[in-house]
Image (cartoon, rainbow, N blue to C red; front, side, top):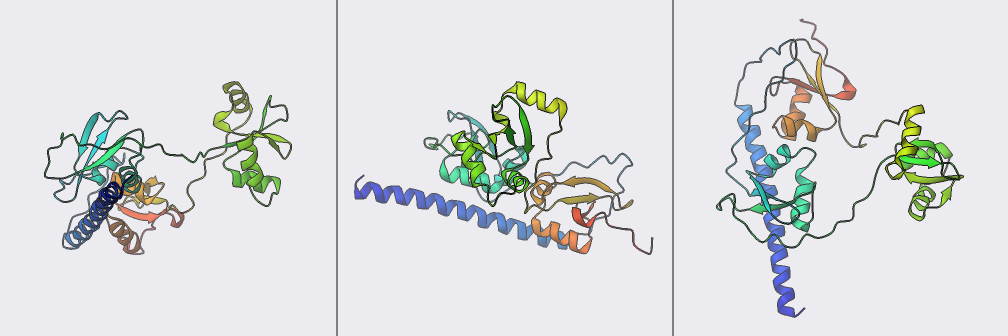
Length: 282
């Protein structure tokens, strides 16, 4: 690659990085504006029906930042969203960070390519999004310990750390190596449970219960609470799950938790704190 080509490549990459940083700043600014607007609004609390039928979140029309296009693996245009927040709310299981990284690195994310599009252009504008780059995915899941001859699943753990603690190992390095090299450790053949054949899995599940999947250690489980009955209506696994279903910023949610204020006609609390108890006045 000539010096001119290298300079042009660097310029294009740096331009994309700056566009992504600008999008993030605009998103943060929109969240601050939302907080200011909510501080000036006074809304009445609506009583939730006994069957707890949840109101549908309203969708805001975005006027700033980039739109987000969705493409198939073969770079066939699928859909255009008003922004990255709208795209992640529509595509369950996605996150703004993961989508931005996929756009920046030109990789697949949840089976699709994603692309920032200027708000001045039509939604169906087809741009060159570049060749799709391969991504190395870190495999996770249940860990199965099979008998030495591999004819039966003996134990299943939610992760390598749990298996390490069960066998009293100082680290999970030997478990990881056994999976990678298809060798034995602690007298067992070790595999990811999903990689075991169906017959072995069926036999194991007929006589045992699989362990509960471990949630992310840093996630905060959030309770949505009926402001009238003070009962938990729904529990979310993380703050991200809350704001994807009920549009609000993290700042707004944290404030509602700390000051026990209603947002979207509900009270909110961290799961480990339990439901908010009724006040003495009640």
